[in-house]
Length: 488
Image (cartoon, rainbow, N blue to C red):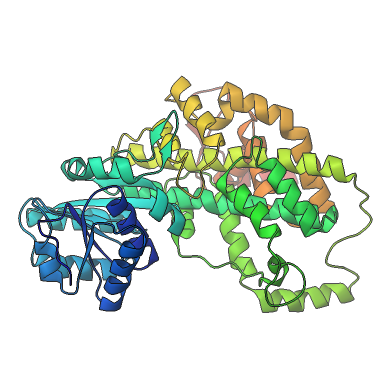
């Protein structure tokens, strides 16, 4: 392979599409890079791309030893391999040739505790370790992703100059990268980012369903509605690509491609981890949880087809008809419902990050996270700027819903939000994301909930005790005895 005449600045191992694109991005920013992959064809492919894309300073290696030795000391190597045991295997391969003070960065979607375990193991060998979330998909990796490095601050300082140039650049707020915090915080933050992404995608799908199924909008109309929405408060990557999707014709037949896509959503696991962590930390995250449930139910395609037959025979069509709607009003209502629901989804994600930060002592800055998500990543949106400002106004904000600006926006939109959810329910269309977001808002904004009855039940059957609204302390009542006396 063509070797660099002098040591390269950094190395990257793992050349699937994300790895290739990140390596080319680094090289394009003027940092000579060595690349390595277990199957050598990917190495050659990446070297070929570097030549084609502007004779970039990228050097390929077929064996791990010459790869490691080609990098200047202290060496920094980014790994982009599948989470789990492939990461451990790659670390084992590379660390055989690394020296004290060298650094490994895992750029995959790894479970945060695995990163913490590896950081400890690496430290014993005198090596530094970072777990770095990378968001933006293939395009982001090539042209500027959002990056969330956590772990050794010393390791971050080694590579800060590269990350600042390689990250997405947002005018007025800078590169979309920051040192997140200690341990597995970078991976944790990326995991929650993905959970928020699940929520966003589900809410958009529900908006689509209501507009198409009740409003009877065609794909052409949907394309123009989403394109229009992308000029206002909903301006974001996900709304932009949704508009694009509605405009793409099927290359294998008549009509639009979106209608030929099987209604079964896949998943890699980060959404599930987010919901599990929310449960572990007793943080309500119903919007994110409902998006996960929607993916599970979408997977039951054959069962749903059979269920549709059963209920059709009982007089239930796919959509309950009889709803006459004003199309223009519906489009505006759905836009408002989508925005209000989105606030709830982000509030839940931010609360989860804060709860974990407190538990682990990470001292994460929520406003700074909103800033680095403004560009490069999948959830990038103009809306994140307002979230950043909310945390700038009050870093100890209990919930985004009570920030004065967001509170005002929800109050202005709640009538439209309720209309959309009611319309969907009456039409037999499930909107779990919008409905659970609304339930979250309605629960959070009430000073008193029916939880008093649940606690009374717990004390009745399990002597779990209860507190009172008028007297300090814990109380237990012999409910069973009193109830029996009253019955006699």
